[in-house]
Image 1: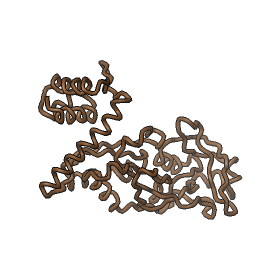
Image 2: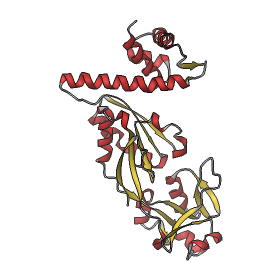
Image 3: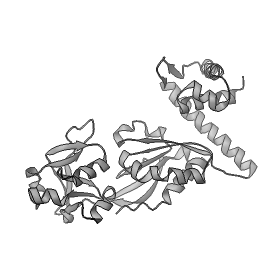
Image 4: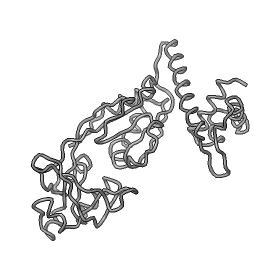
Length: 297
């Protein structure tokens, strides 16, 4: 049994999430796909996949093996394309982004991307940054305020800020807070995450120094666009990324509070593990996203 074919089958099984889907894509039977993976497990002497009737997961050894095999196959494809004199991007690229940024900036570009690169398949994972527990599994990650690690390539798309806002309706009913200290007298909408129920404290630049203020949250959400919607509905005061409220600020559905105390600019970045930088598909994805008009402010 050809070892290279077995490696290709293994990668497809992992990326497509089942033997049957991988087999259908490769034009073989599910039994044959399972046999290929079993032979690999016998060769390396370790179980690569944990199989149950309901799900399939990589083992710890399987995950490390998968990353190396995927890198190897990408290198083989790149070498073949170089010999042919073509670097047509093809293959599968994984993208991770916070849900609000992904829906607002990434998803509307999927069709134009596919029109330009029909041989590239995308796996897009949307969720807050704490949900991405293994960033090394991702080819391209969209981040705000977080530069990449030393072993990642980082591309700064622009900058945004965290700004406090409220709707004119809310301010008419409850009055306008003059300073962040007044927030204790107001209803607030906080960004919350599973490990911090009730939301995070709010950060302002006061007298040239960062100050953290408690904001009594009547509502916490883990999605920036949802925070924008709640603030527009008059639920309360919100601290949110400016890039997620550009239209609402422009048409005065939201009003900026404490403009002199806004946070320092936060970089909006694309990061990609350096070890995947040679893939034409990954590089094409990065170049495409970098060329977009992000309209961050």
